[in-house]
Length: 238
Image 1: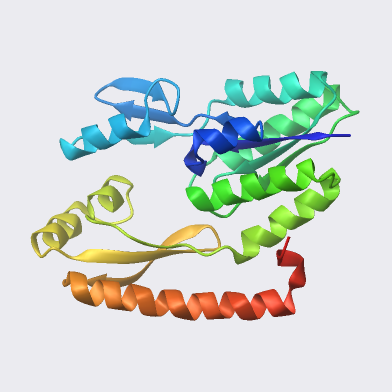
Image 2 (image 1 turned 90 degrees about the horizontal axis):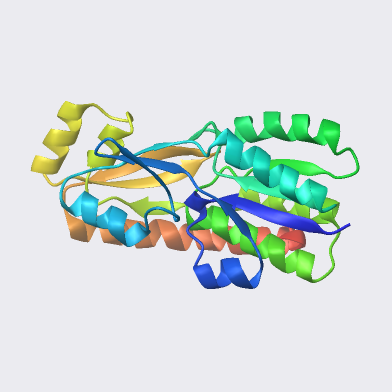
């Protein structure tokens, strides 16, 4: 039985890939100035950036349970298995909500499988998993084999990124408002990474040059470790 790849809008996949591989994208909800938007449907990334440039930071909430249920039911009625690669469960409650809904839907459509996999990732890292999973399905891989790959990728994928401001961390409740203000006044820039699905601070820098040098150094080390893992774990290579 064939399967449908589902992912949420935090995946940041280009529309061309989404359309080419028929990847279903469920929208997160964005809340800006007392208005709510479906990410990628009612509002696009460039519009969100325009709000941020004006100092208006959007708040987010999980994918609508109704959207999740309707999507699972739609594909179950077509006789398709579902593989939902969710945004990290430590950054959003969407994953847990989707698992509860999947169990209920599968009780009615017992002939199909609905699997929710915690990507332990976000942004394009989750998108890469969805893209690679779609490629495997296109090559004829069975659902169980694709699920094994996704779970393996979730344990090994790397995130390393820099924020221009601490403001987003403050709004997300990860640091205090006073820390954010002081950090922005001193022009402190955080170097962040993801550990087991959770964003963590690696280092803080007051100088752009030092940050970039450190970033490149850490990146080289992690690429080297990944290359070693690829030799030891050939399953990662498709």
